[in-house]
Length: 204
View 1: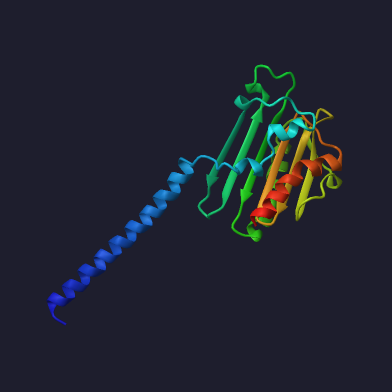
View 2: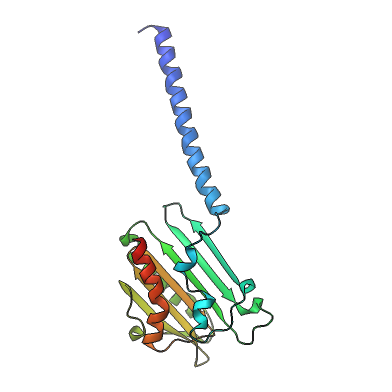
């Protein structure tokens, strides 16, 4: 092999390496861009969260669009989080208090969802322990829908103040936190979460 041929091979190898690094850099930049500047939620993302409209059927206040926020964030592993929040403190006309959030995690496979389902319960329970005067009472009979589920009632100063509802359906994990509205009947809790479960089944 001549020196000219060796030089050509080294040049081609260098170009290939730089091209590979460029593609890798572009992929990393794209992932960071999606996390730091997430795209707007899809039109059908509302079907995967518990909205104020849904809670109105169970005694919640009249919804005000100014009091809600819906976001969606793509993760590095290809999963996707959809977050919905509603807080009546942003509604000057609200007569009752309601703070609710839904976090829907869409995983690439059921195994990841199973792990996330367990972690959601652990993280929330740990957070409640840090709140003075707050408790989370397990109520396993309150939910029956989904491949796996967890239900609890928040109590503050010995009064029920809301719920934690976590449901896994396939690769979807739904976590609903309610403050200001209490579900204590299985029929109503199941009715609240069933539309999310059915939507997950359609998309699986």
